[in-house]
Image (cartoon, rainbow, N blue to C red; front, side, top):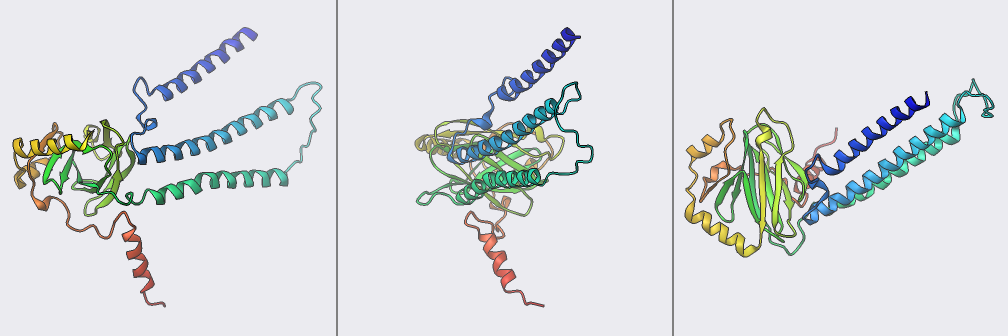
Amino acid sequence: MAPKRSKRAFRYLSLMALAVGLLVSGCGQQYVLLHPAGPVAASELGLIYISGAAMLFMVLLVWVLFAIVIVRFRDKPGNKAPYRPLWDHNRKLELFWLALSFIIVIIISVPTVQKTYALDKIPSGTDPIVIDVTSLDYKWLFEYPQQHIATVNYIDIPSGVPVLFELTADSPMNTFWVPQLGGMEYTMPGEVLPLWLEASHPGVYWGRSGQFSGTGFVHMTFNVKAVPMAQFQQWVQNVRQTASPMTLADYHQLLQHNWISPRSYSSYPASTFPNTTHGFTLEGGMYMQMKNMYMNMPSN
């Protein structure tokens, strides 16, 4: 029996090691979420570490207590553990678990709230690059209102400069996500939601749709190329001079349910992006608007 048990235990340990290896290696791909390339992603990675450490502590504690119970209360000759068939509860243990759970929640929630509010505003004294993002079926349209150019399924941005993404959708609701630069944000028809990200250094960063929105959503991937400001301005001039303008007919073709290769436009119609944001801003405009509305409502 001993050799069989040893083989079974070795098999279980091998499977666990394989699972951990796949998680760490990403099945041969770089785990980009753990390699932040900007201040927003670096701040959010700290929250992932805090939450992971807290949850790992709880898991290990449960397994240690589980092992103690197995050894202490195992039905075997000579076991001196007390036999209490009418045991119901232990008030001290219940208070301990309640207090420990409360402490874990505090450890996770306090830094999460602090960093969420800190990241709600673009750093003061900076002039961000604005990119209007529209999720389509099944592609991404990026419009640069300051440069008056547009791209499909790829973005160029200057490194070391905040980028304000204004997000909407002309298709089912979707999610815009560049893992190495920061967390994801929704795109919704008829609404404009803000998200600011920044690439600390030049590089090419992988982006994609983070939400199922149809059979072709798997193709909704794009690259974010961060370059020095001078190279970014040169790229803008090159697009203006070499790319063709986007017409309304071109935009209606983009609305079709298909996937297309990356492309550029030297200009685009103003009507392709919503004019109003319904109060959503990076300074909490929507919150203040709703607060004032409720404060002015007559009481019953």
